[in-house]
Image (cartoon, rainbow, N blue to C red):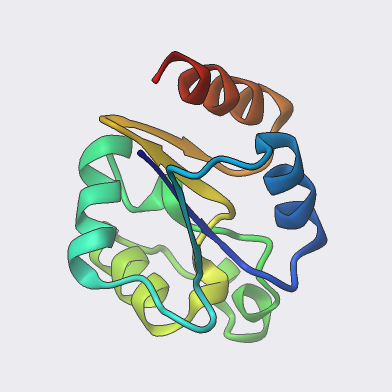
Length: 118
């Protein structure tokens, strides 16, 4: 079963979900309505290797909070993602023990391939 953490208002996420196609076994989670839990984020970190990989530096709050000028540790990335949904790099797609982070063509293609193998 695939689980996709995304933002309904994000046109890129909408496009990628369209590329994934209709899949009855895919759970789509709108992170604005239902924030990522600490357990889910920890699981993502376990699959990805770090919280930093899951962190979006493109979020508008990244600059407005002055985070670009600070040195952040893993715990900072975790705390920020849990406090503010926009800091999660989107979409995050989990298929079994594989994780696909972000919207690069390579990540989307790999996620689709993994879904098709299930």
